[in-house]
Image (cartoon, rainbow, N blue to C red; front, side):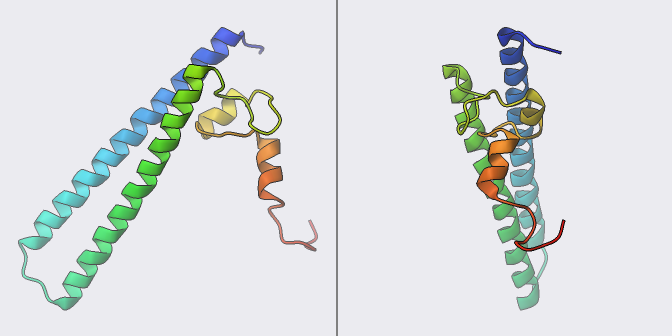
Length: 129
């Protein structure tokens, strides 16, 4: 079904803002969960092994938070592109990125074909496919 440019723009905006809300909710949840976990752990006497495990959990929580913050930064860039009118346009070939792809990867900068060219084959060289 062909969409008008206005319908496409509206669909892309909906996709972006829904993903942005989800990412913010995930980040808030991760930060609060980590804080709650650490507060609970500090109330319990610990040995060296427990402290090491707490450090590992804290580092893991920070890594997850870092990934979510990176995605939010990419989302902000996508919102900026939406406002200037360049969102949803492949940076390599200049064609429209299908809305279905943007639903899966809202901050995609390339269409699938160009992304595959950037990444190369998904199988080792010389492999029989």
